[in-house]
Length: 539
Image: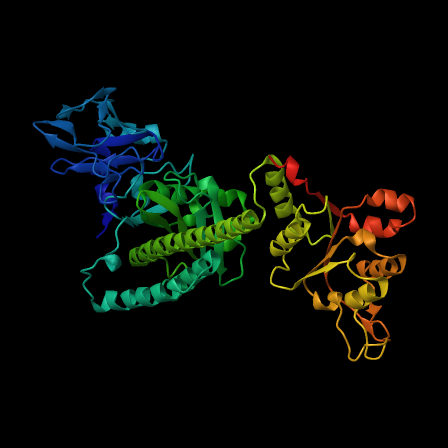
């Protein structure tokens, strides 16, 4: 139902008292008062004067004529109503120029219309506009000269489509079915951007919009939101136009009122005068619907229609609000799913870390500072894949350290092969390390795979590496440098991928100085060095 203002009504309107908003988001707005009619004021869209202010209750106060005077009555609001700075408890008579405060909004009672329009700075000749249709509780005399704004023709914070007892008529049946199908599609989306694109596709199918956007706040957990923190998540345009925010006024109105808003005369917004791209967009009407859940605002859905003969209407706003409510639930589900996935990943990592620590503590017994430092170094070195030289006296557990490095590396599932270089002669050590072909020497009755090949993809631990002969050192160096080698008595190149962990109880620096150990091999081995302290020092 709408109110129609005609030239014949002008004299009545001019004579009527008005409420004039002096400050707040509706600054400059005026509301005509009628005897025998109660003017309700509050945050809910059902009020005659709707104030999108979080400090304003949904049904805050009312102004009415009784006993020959205009009065204001607080309706049990959360933050109270103040008249001339005094909080009221009952009915208070309004006298010309009295001001009452609702949240951050100051409203002045003016006894005649002409003074109200002079205060607002608008033309009193309403008769120039002979027929204009607006929602009865949203009609406003706007300051069109100083601050042009679109005309808000409808606002609603409720939608019949999400009610459990919705009356499925031919008008509501198809949109309700579309909402069900959309809900099923949304439940399968795991990406926020794709989810929002799915929502826009559905809205384009139902409404006459040809431009749409979903904007979300950076911090979805914060109950109060600044429009400047809105981020564009998804955008669709049938004309391939770039995204532009059309009206800050409509955006703020929707955010403050938590209601879906329909606005016409969008080009009257002062932003159009300073933006060529906005003028090119030719938006005739706009819907701005809040994405809300509980007391939090997650963002907005904005729809624009450029066809002046097929503007967005109240039914479109109601459907869009229902979609926005569905989107809010889907976004919360995605956030919860992401939180659970992150929690599972964290628990898995913690479990892995604890298992690794338990594994080390099982084999490396002790709680001294040196053992704790050794465990920490093993956990840092193991994942690097670098060659490691373990140094320490005989019997300190160098092989346990090497095994721990392997178990905590990326090669943990591959072989761990050990070889004591001091236990065999030069010829046997070469055969053990590099393998031999059948008939290569007396007793070589078949091909033998060497330790390096056995450790392919894993780790080879060479204990007492300082006991290697110069000839074995040279061949070993080529393997460390990534070159292929040949088995003893063979001519086929063999390539291996192994991590080398070597150990010694010798003073290799002294061996290098005396020429018993190759200097280049020494530097190849000493990429990472671990010193294992003797047992007598682990106290």
